Structures are given as structure tokens and as C-alpha cells.
Length: 319
Image (cartoon, rainbow, N blue to C red; front, side, top):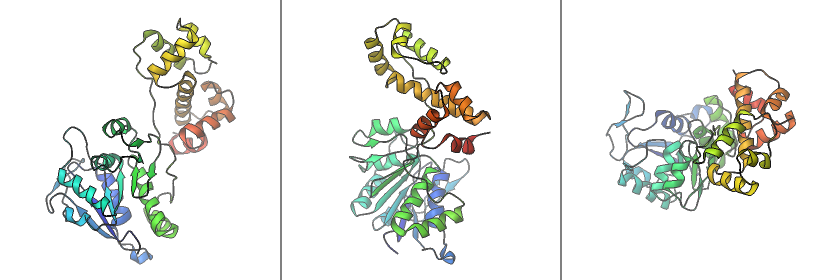
């Protein structure tokens, strides 16, 4: 059946049920009556038969198999579970490291990327995780290149995905990569999900106003955010902040982590998203309220920063 004959999912305490369910749904169900391949699916834990708590109150999961099943797995899937100062079970970390060294593909869903990082699998590779955790992932594993925006990253032997539903996309992408579009499309149809969302599509991330140490710069940020419909220049903002243009640009980059133009564009896109979600205003009116001037310019920046067209965003999230 190819390189996905045996699939092992490794669990830890306080596992996330949805992310675990995603892996089970794609790889764990018998769909041979539909002409689909049957995976040798093993649910593994540090100790076979030992119940593990989940993130859902009142639900425990008992893995049938131990870590030895990872040794000859073609795919090791790592769903989400908490990370932090308590660390991971060293036996689980070593088993994942050994499985990868033996040639297994490793796929992580959401915060499962932290276990891959603990096993050294992110070093020198691009990866992603849920947008809430990307900064922590980059801080804990500085040898990794963390992409905060995408749905998933395919690095060959390592596939990392963002939160929740992005795990479905990553799993189906792997099936398509190894077993072809026909198999992936049939599984997607049974799951009633889109057969393919490109991994480069943006996560839907809110970008709030950053905290600033400088009162004058903080005032400038708040004023810009309250007057997004108006044109702004670096020179004018510098004058409002009682700074030279060069000083303002330098301090803005240091405090906000980006340029004034990029920050302003991001805030305008945030407002556009809110208006697309909460109102029925046409695109030209939204563009005017957000300071883009035209619907064409709004569509250009929206597609670039969000990854989909404004009309598609409204269809997905509009009231």
C-alpha cells in the first residue's frame, strides 16, 4: 500500500480530543468498502493500557499499545497536548526521536509540534503550530524556522500543522502526497470537508495593538487606529509624536516590530475583517472606511495578508 501501511499515534496526558479525533478519522477508520486502503492504526502511550486524561472533562483515553509500536511505523502522528515547564515524558521523546531516525514520517497537529521540538526534529527545518503558540515555539526551539501564518508546513519527513482544523488539511495533504488524489478526495468526501486547502493559506490571526514603552509612540498608535480612514505619512506621524522622521521610524520599528506602513496596513485589514463579519456593507464602502481608497486596493492587501479574497472571508465568517 505504499509508505503509509502502519500509522502510530502517540498520546500524552491531557491530550486534545479533537486533534486526536482528526488523526483517527483520517487514518483509523476502515473504509475498505469504499475501495480505500486500510491502515494498520495503533494508538500508543508510554505505558500500554494506562488511561490518560484528556482536555475534555470526564473523558479518559486508554492507549492499547506501548511505545515499541513506533519503531517500525511509517507515520507517527502527534496530536495536541499541553507543553511547558513540566516537559514531556523522556521515554516518549526518545521513542519519537528513534522513530524519525528509523525513517518514519512525523506529523504534528497544533501544539504537538512542541514534542517534535523536544525530540530535536524541528532543528534546521521550517514548521508551524497554532498562532497562539508560535512565539513560544520559536523561543523554545531557536534552531527551527517558525512560520506563524500558514496552515501546515511539509518538510518531507516532518509535517507540522496549525490549530484544530488545519490538522485535517495536513493529514489529507499527506494522504494525497503518498497515496494520490483519488484516495485523499474519497476520505475528504466521507468526512464532508474540502479535499484540499493549500498549506500556504493564512491562519486567521488577530493582531492587536502592541504594548509600547514610549507614551508618545503609544499615543500615535492609538490615534492611527482611531483614524484608519484618513491618509497618514511617516512625516506627519513623526510631527504628531514630536520626533524627527528618522527617530520616529527607528523607534516605531523597535517598539512595534514593523514599519509604520506595514502596521497601518495590518490594522486596516483587521477593521476590514470586522466589517466583513459584522455588516453587509459593500466592498467599496468598507475600503473607504478602512482607508484603502478602492475595493481593488483592499482586495490586493486582503489577499496578500489573509490568504483569501474578502468575499470568501465574508462567506466563511460573516453573520
